[in-house]
Structure formats: structure tokens, C-alpha cells
Length: 501
Image (tube, rainbow, N blue to C red; front, side, top):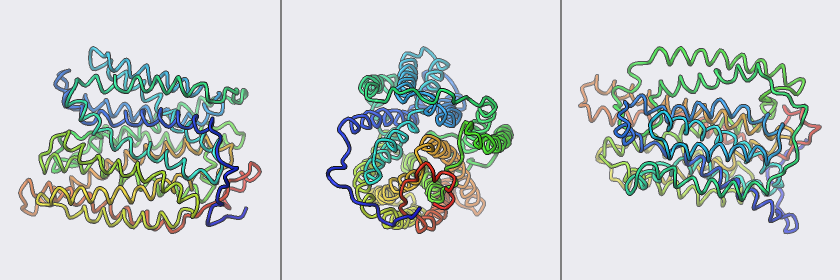
């Protein structure tokens, strides 16, 4: 199949039906609320420690358990979406999320709150692959860029503004209002979205591979748990850069190694099962060159995104001494800028393809990360804000083209599996990126302290080292950006020839 560098422009007659727009809109709202919820707990951990009288390692399970559930459930979504109707899968996801949110809001103690977070995560894990599969099914090729731009808002902006939203809520109300605010929106999304989704039954003879499930849970779960524990969690709570990564939990390392072994066995089993179309997670999307390149670029971008979400708030609180609310407000403009740019970049992508967008975006990413590698306690606040805005611009130029370029070449039979693979690896890259950046920050601070710098100066040097490491990884993003090109959608008959795309 021939590829093109520029997508074909849409005609007025080929515009999306209003019903399809409403369907995608309902899914976007539901997914946005769910992913917003993923990071909304970050600045609430300290108040929860005081209320429930629990130590930091215990309260961290509110974020660790959420990520673990995502890692375990997302690989099953390819099967679920093919086996059951889109309406049924959506209803199950929203009911799980709403039930978990209500349980968390009413939690009398920490165990019930934790159970609510796990149930929330189970619903969240299903929604994003469902959203992407629905978009690929309903949206014609020439319109996917602009719709993927809205998905980019969900994936990149919702996590970024989560701490801001929770900071504002905690400033004026009890922590339970973080859930009470989300609950009616989730219920409304369920009521509006459910009637609009296809109720046709899935493939009835599609059987669940139990051995695959038994391998995937400890595989993906073990890797995420091990890496997140080594990386010190995902919150913006107090963290001493001099101690970060200085000692490694042997249990976490053991769980990580076990997870790698189980994941390797899972991959080998999927390669065998997909020959008979019975794999839990079909790995055939990797035979499409543009999918693989764009996916790898997205994984590197997630490191940069979480570098901003983790390191900048830590720097602002520990070096500048800002409160969680002020820190969240400092991070808010960058998230809003990405939300503003994403649909615009999607429209431009539909006209000119990925390369004119991703090459400048990756260049801006490298430059902004490099600049953040020179911040200090004397850097004016407005310069840090500008650096974050420039970084957000670079990420906005990358996210939508990368998502669209990855999914466009896939045939319809691989939509659900391609989106499940993408979202699973995003969770892994977020955990790996956070662990790596925190570890590098600790090494940099320790080396600076060994050279005779004061504790405060060593901590600043740790942050600089971590940002420079992220800048080095961003160079790989720039290299991959030059290899992306627009490709036409594959026909079902092309599935076995994916390596040529």
C-alpha cells in the first residue's frame, strides 16, 4: 500500500454526523474526568495522613494501587471490546468508576478509601482504549487529527491540572469533595453516553485466554509496582533529593524481576495465540512501522511530561517554599495552553501530516528541558513559568500527531488491541520515567553533596541533573520525529503485510 506525506483534505459532504460527534463528546467527558481523577490525589496525601493517622508508605498506596489496577486491567480491554458491545463495555466502565467514586467519598477509614480507588481504576482502565477504538471506528481518516487532538487533551492535560483542581478544593472544602465533585459528572456522562453507543453484540465465539490473564496480572502489575516503589511514588509530597534513589528496596527489585519474567512469558504466549486469533492482547500492531515508531516517541514524551508533573512541583515546593495550591496554580497555565493548542494542532495535522509538527515540537522539547536544567533558587518565578509554557507547547505539537500517526495505519480488527497496547505501555513508561528521574535526581544531589555543596545547593543540583537527563532522552524523540509520516488506513486484507507500512 502506498503511503502519503500529506493527508487528503476533507470536503463538506464528508463531515461527521452530529450523532457521532455527540457520542465521541460523551466519551471524551467521561474519560477526562477519569484521568483527572488519576492525579487528583497527589496533593491530598498529607491531609489524609493526618486524618487517618497513617504513615507515608501506607497513604502512597492510594496512587500505587490505582496504577497497579490500570496496569492489570488495560491489557484485557482489547478482548473486552471485541467480545462485548461498546454500550455494554462503556456501561460497565462508568458504573465501576461511579461506584468507586461514591465509595471513596463515603469512606469511614483508609481501607475503604483504598478499595474505592481500586474500583475507580478498574473503570478508568477500560475507558481510554474504548474511546480510541470508537474514534477510529466512527471518524474518517481525514478528520482523525482534530478528534485525536481532543483525546490529547484528555491524556496530557487532565493529569496536569489534577493537582491544581485538588489544591483548590482542599483550600475551601474537605477532601471528600474531590470525589463528590466528580461523581455527578460521571453519572451524567453515563446517562448521556450510554444510549448513543452501539449495542450490537461482540464476537460471541471470542474466548478469554485464562493462561494469558494469569501471566499478564503479575507481569504488568509486578513491573509497575517494582518501578513505582523504586521511584518513590508519584505524589508531590515532601521528598529529599539527597535520599532519592540512595537505597533500593530489595523487595521492589524482586517484584520487578518477577514481573519481567511473567511479562516475557506473556509476550511469548500472545505471539503463539495470535496465530489462531485467540490472544488476550494481539501484538500485531507492532508489525506496522509507523505505529511502532510513533509509540516509541510517545513513551519518551511521557518521561518529559512526568518530568514536568513530578520535578517542577517538587522544586517549587521544596526550593521556593510554595504551598500545594500555589504550586498547582503555577502549573495550571501550561495545562490550559496544551488544551488550547491540541485541537488546533489536530486540524493542522489533517492538512499537512505529522513531520512538520513533530520535528519543531521535539526541538522545543529538547530546548525547554535543557533550559530547566539550569534553574536555581534565584531563578525568577516568571522564568520557570515561561519554561513550563514552552515545554507545554512542545508537548502539544507532539501528542496529537504521534497518537494519530500510530493508530491510522492499523486495520479495524486491530483498533482495540492497538489502543490497549498503547495505553498499557504508557502506564509502564510513566512509572519508568518517574522512577528514573527521581533516581537521577538523587544521584545528582548525592554527588553534589560529596563535592562539598550545602544540603540546599545539593538538592538544587539534583533537580538540574534530572532535567538534563530528561533533555538527553528528548533528543531521541527528535530523532524519531524525522521518521514519522502520514499513512493511509490499512485494509483488513493488509493485516498480514503490516511490516511494509
